[in-house]
Image (cartoon, rainbow, N blue to C red; front, side, top):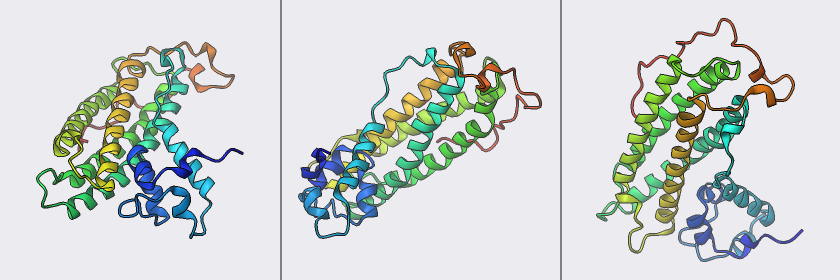
Length: 255
């Protein structure tokens, strides 16, 4: 097996260029900030760590950031909802805890700098809470309904999700504002750079996530279920006993 090219890149470079890499470094107590000039290979040499395994984890993170160029209108509903959960819901659940940790660190260490993103960590915690509530409603109520053939047009839970998407968009705008336009300040440390890279990726991911739902799934533009594998629930009729108003708008705040 060919050695990973990531092994000879510095920890600081990897932290800046691969959103989510800092979580792996933090887990294994690799110093990407003050020790950021060390290569991944050299950093793990004194430790009981498998450098190649670590590099593969980092490569997988890089792959998650790539948006697949697929026309999702040609996919059946179940294929799209499964993609949304695997590619976006689970990704957001990985992204936000690490971004909150990075933001707290930057706010603590660089509080005296005018470019410091004061209040960003608290805002990200609000986003995490609201987004998790939103995703659970999709996974537990809306997606099963759509997978069983319920048409999305005019469906009350769909309208609620659209409303919450608008709030997520407002939250993203506020995130960018708190981070001073996501512009990297002069002399930013590796932690700060990693935070900004992660915020860029979160914004791109969440915007693509909302686009696939609002503009394809919720518009009923997916391909006929005739192309689904045998036994796919897309081919079934709307499940009986599933309420079309099972999502409440109460308690929704901006995400």
